[in-house]
Length: 331
Image 1: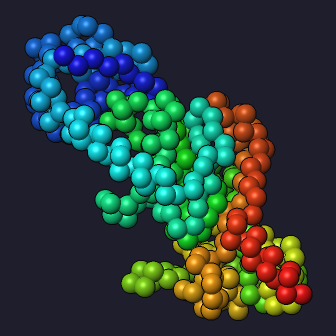
Image 2: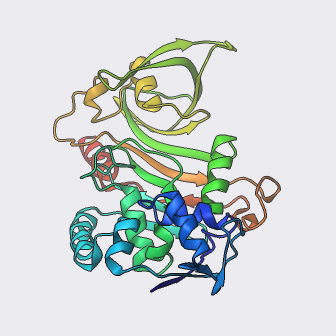
Image 3: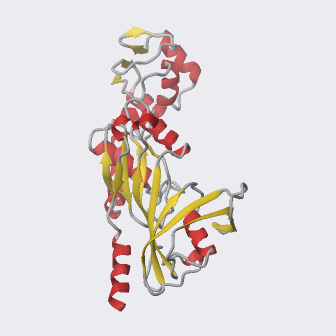
């Protein structure tokens, strides 16, 4: 017999829909048959499958262990142990950490070189780290993981470091996705660009991505051209002889937006070889998502009012700090 409890991320859905996800390899007709024969029960009672699940409901199933593992797609204790060992090795190789966490969301500081989400099965991305982190601290159970997967809500390029927003719960995912989609959260980057930029300005343009070379191309626009699909604010924080430390505020979020836009203006990001920078000794481009500002409580749903105008800032990355120190020492 197998027994488990419905968690908050599994509640609010029909029992049969939950079972289809939980027993993903079982035919739906078989699931209904098992319900009729009371081989799957809800709160120790016969169920039709149309019941709406509540947090704390008890589900029991009466399968052999072999059949249960087959239907859920699990590999048994040995398989789980092998996966956990492999994930731990990956996890320990990346210096990623949570900088804010509550019941529904987590904000992580992603290192340069780590994928936001995996491109192939063997990859270990922020999504996999998030799952491991939540299982390790008890925020997520393996049973919940069968029907709900926590996930990132925004993405950073592999070689860009900094703040990335994650949904720990279903409602956390939904709320963060909403405020990002509606442009209610302010996202600031810090970068070191070639050349002198001594005045703040807003750049507008039309961005097109060539997926064959994974590179974006920009047509710069002036004035209030309504055809613009990217808008970016650039503010110089410090200007050197031939480089500028910039704070960047995205109004839109397109692939490679900051990197391509600065390159198109003749100011490529330090270390960004894809967009024309020729800096020796830099493994990654110097671009960091270093600051987030949440909207006021009037724009946040119930359960998220505590994020009212909350600001999260992280220190400059070691890569940026090191390059700034080298520039200062050359003066």
